Amino acid sequence: MATDLSKFAKDNGVKYFMVSFTDLFGAQRAKLVPASAIAGMQTDGAGFAGFAAWLDMSPADPDMLAVPDGDAVIQLPWKPEVAWVPANPMMEGEEVDQAPRNVLRKLIGEAEEAGLRIKTGVEAEFFLLNPEGTELSDPLDVAEKPCYDQSAVMRRYDVIAAICDNMLDLGWGPYQNDHEDANGQFEMNWEYDDVLATADKHSFFKFMVKSIAEQNGLRATFMPKPMEGLTGNGCHAHISAWDKSGKTNKFADTSDEGNRSGSLGLSPLAHHFLGGIMAHAEAMTALTNPTVNSYKRLNAPVTTSGATWSPNTATWSGNNRTHMVRVPDPGRFELRLADGATNPYLLQAVIIAAGLDGVANQTDPGKRLDINMYTESNKARGAKKLPLNLLDALRAFDKDKVLKAALGQEFAGAYLKLKHDEWNRFTAHFSQWERENTLDV
Ligand SMILES: [Mg+2]
Image 1 (cartoon, protein in one colour):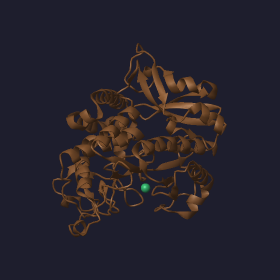
Image 2 (cartoon, helix red, strand yellow; image 1 turned 90 degrees about the vertical axis):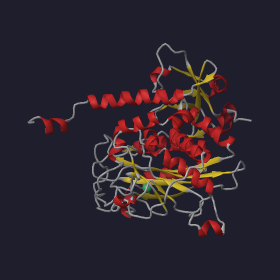
Image 3 (cartoon, rainbow, N blue to C red; image 1 turned 135 degrees about the vertical axis):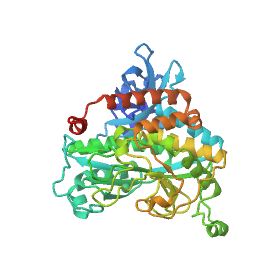
């Protein structure tokens, strides 16, 4: 029985619900619905003009109805009279196929058919900037190697502790917060969960971080590379697949034989899932690294801290952070490809789509490389380079028929169309760099 939102409002003193959906560009859009009207909305959905969001719809289309998922409701810890509830977009009685939360739910169903329950955790890094978003907010945060700087994290204690307290109240199991590798950059970690729960939490986390930062007179950004020369905002995902009960990790290989064979504690199933990720890596970047700015983080020149911490090639390794995939512990692996601009739902969807293809075809992930990819990449012969810009990524996605089919043709068509439009708007923009380098040609 799904959570009755009307009853939830009465039990918890909620006055308004934010009925929220996420569009193809990751924008969260909501209507504020008074608790007195939520019962009807829970059945019929809240009406939106789809054309007004990034969903590739027409102004002539009928109402898009966002039907709240009552079980996913989250009361705003900093404004308890309001509750956020993610919704599934519908139109004329049918699911909107290209809506990201629907894309993910479809893929979860396919994983279930394959007997898998995918669980992930995400590490959504962010910067705290001045309110205009033009400068770092802390003038004392200037260390060459600022990672784990204890004084710098304490100067932002009010913001970090408020967010962490909220996650504690929500029962997310947060367990550590730190100053990250760029000046002004932070990371907060909470427990992994089923992919839909992780995607909802990831969405809410971004909303919460921005809201708490604003309350403190700051601007939070998840932009992949907000400051030239500094480490960018990654969104690493730790991936495992479980049985139906969610109690047995099917990625874990604890057998003696497994350990002797150097499996790093990953089962054959995990290797095949990883094989799918490796095989589709170039196409995946269209979703994991979805903006023009994303490609200033991937393939970046060395940062002032000494390392970008982001991959440049589709390679995997053991506990080694210079590769696209790291196996830090038995039973899971870390995909280090995605950045802060990735759509929380599409990130999870594309992981499942690529991974299930690997499982279905028993794809070999290729040889594990135990080298420093930042200094010895010449030794990684034959390894695929990641796309150098958004256009290359979109072309790679367009060519990947398997991934497009898995995510759905409606979705793939809409996404490619809108993202090509975005690329065209970017290239039409006349930049100062061009003037400086071309004026006297
Ligand atoms: Mg990090």
